[in-house]
Image (cartoon, rainbow, N blue to C red):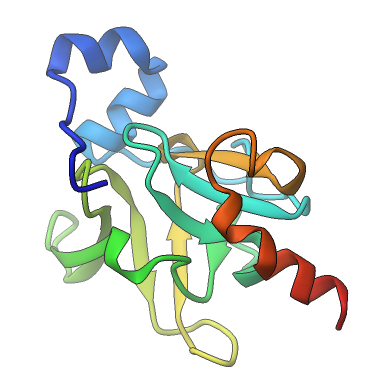
Length: 152
């Protein structure tokens, strides 16, 4: 990811759906329970829709009851950054991708064990890659995580 260069705005508008563009580039929030991944239970990983940087794993996904995909922790900590968001007259912790600077969602401290954290993400900011396609799409390094989970 060190050689990733974020596309310019016209390229992003052409490449992303209008919702993906609004969420990732203008900090919008998609509707709960009406998005691609809130109820996805298939094993795999979620990557940034702009850069492809790995963000979250289905192994850390849980049903938060909020209508958005929620995770207890990032898959690759260095690919996720946080900052204070004061846009709704309160302080919240915004989550962004490290390389593409895409708005992903928000972080809350009301999640389950083991972390107690809830990374509440927008489906529009991510692309899901099922385990069966990890190697083909260049994410084969994450296959051992799922092989270990199968043996438990």
